[in-house]
Each structure stands twice: as structure tokens, then as C-alpha cells.
Length: 98
Image 1 (cartoon, rainbow, N blue to C red):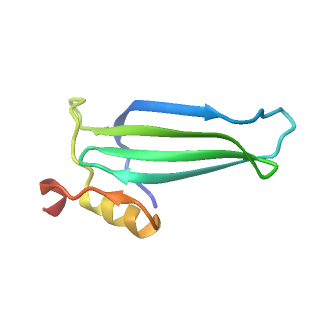
Image 2: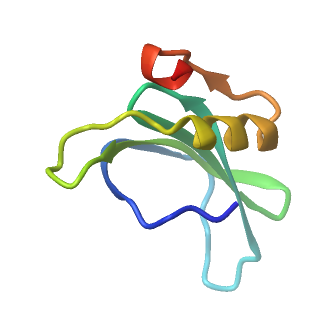
């Protein structure tokens, strides 16, 4: 899904480390949108090394307008994300219904 260039800010980020990752490790990162809020996207990720979970985490990013004020996630984004992600929590807001 191609998105136009946007302005945003990471407002929350957490990571839990479960196992070491070395320079010679074959790493797989699984990243998905878990929730679409009014002005934010919550993404969750998992880092896997040799079929073992090495790290898990969450990132919340807020969409900003030209004045760095939070703005609503466009309806088209909500539709595309929910069509792509099977179990995403999409918050219905007044602005997303318009």
C-alpha cells in the first residue's frame, strides 16, 4: 500500500528483549498495525532468530498536520489497513465516518 508523504511523531515505544541477536544471526521481523485510533496508529512487532522470539514491542505514531497538530487518520487509510490486517482494532470516530 503506497501512502503519500506524511508528517508524524512517535509518541510511545517499548521493546522487550527475550534472546540475544548476534551479527551472524538470520533475523526475521514481523511488523503489523494492531490498532487504528482517531489520530494514531499502534504497531506491534516481533524479532525472530532461528525460530526463537528475540524481541517484541510496540510503537505508537500520531499523524500530524502541517502545523504539527494531531490530525485524524484518513478514512481511506482505515479501509486499506483493515482490509490488509486481519485482526486490527479500528476505532470508529466522527471524522472517520465522514
